[in-house]
Amino acid sequence: MERAQEQIILIVDQDHDFLEWATKHLSAEGLKILRCDQADNAAKVVAKTKVDLLIADLQLQPFDGLELLARTRQASPETLVILTAAFPNTGQVIEATQQGAHDVLRKEALPFELRPVVESALQTAEDRRIAAPPESVGPAPDGRVKIIGVSRVLQDVFKIVGRVARSDAPVLVTGESGTGKELVAKAVHEYSPRRQKDFLAINCGAIPENLLESELFGHEKGAFTGAIAKRAGRFEQADGGTLFLDEIGEMPLSVQVKLLRVLQDGTFSRVGSNETQTADARIVAATNRNLAEEVAAGRFREDLYYRLNVVEVRLPPLRERPEDIPPLAEYFLQRITRKNGMAQVRLSAEAIQLLQSHRWPGNVRELENTIARACALASSTVLLASDIPLAAAPDQSGGIRRAVDALISAMPASAGGAWVLREIASRLIELHQGDLKNAALALGITTAELKKWHSGNS
Ligand SMILES: Nc1ncnc2c1ncn2[C@@H]1O[C@H](COP(=O)(O)OP(=O)(O)OP(=O)(O)O)[C@@H](O)[C@H]1O
Ligand SMILES: [Mg+2]
Image (cartoon, rainbow, N blue to C red):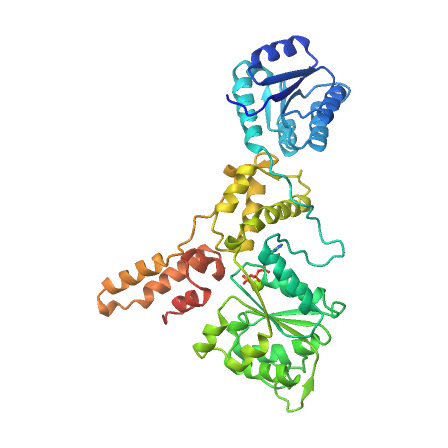
């Protein structure tokens, strides 16, 4: 095989005849073969030299091959390790694999297997030429949320957050699903003088209209059926802190009026009460809808829009900031491996390239899920492009929508079209285990649209 540069193999075995044989058997141009009969000497070589491939017997002195594997993983994570044994037992094979061995081979089979396995391992080593790890991405030292981003646009977001955090001005965070809106909302709170108090979140799209008002502003005992006791709303609870109104675009007009009042003069009333109350909660709202369009369509109050939109933080989709993909991927890798007590996993240059070429309709959330799945399936401690399970690109062009429309118009008028949409919607929702967001994503339509299909009044 062709090698860009000389590769180094270190063979460790107590049997000198074996060392002799393996050296001859493997010798090839562009390859340097070192050998050792003691595990401690081998560990020293690995620590000093850039060994591409270590081939070690399980039975060694003064410590065994598994221990040598562990030390190699520590001292030189890029080195691939192949373990050999006369009769490796299942436990040893499992343990070695878990600890990051590239392969475990039976001595008996080596005359046939050693060469092809080594060839492919060296190819892997070559493919891996690991991209330089981005600057350390541990948790933020002070325990605040960590937002990863090296792109110009994200750096600008950090600056806006830094500037607005000190004020009490309402902030509107916009961006596609999964771009990090909630994370930014938390950052606004955590970098504000309010950080000692609560950050409360409420999802306006997930609470039925008749309950949302009482959820936000509280209610008196007996205000409605089921209101068995007086209850404080989120506004009161977030007094002195921050109230995050997620999916504000889904807020019904009836509640929008009440919210406008709070934003105008800081007062509100509990449901079932005429008494005026005040609370000092800083509002951060988020939406993945285009609120200006919602205003134009009469679904969102214009005056409320301007009140909320004093400062807008726009999070661009991940595909518009590919520079952020490697550090984000590295960050998620570290988080996942640390959480599961796994050996450190790295990304090959080729894997990074693949990640950067994907469209990421689900943005950072999709990247996070993809990395988690890749980690679970990875066969070694470096992720190759082939380890990364990318979802098929969803239909961006609205092609499915058009296909469905064509189907409906081809049907006899008497059949109606709504049930087709309903069928498709419920299948998809089922397929995505009730996750509307993912189901809509797969179809290339918005969640609101999917809901409409599902309820049958499209
Ligand atoms: N820049 C980032 N750095 C680190 N993690 C991020 C970043 N952006 C997003 N994430 C992570 O991606 C996931 C999705 O982010 P988040 O929930 O903030 O998105 P969202 O914009 O609120 O999405 P949705 O509209 O679907 O609610 C979270 O796990 C979040 O921690
Ligand atoms: Mg969110």
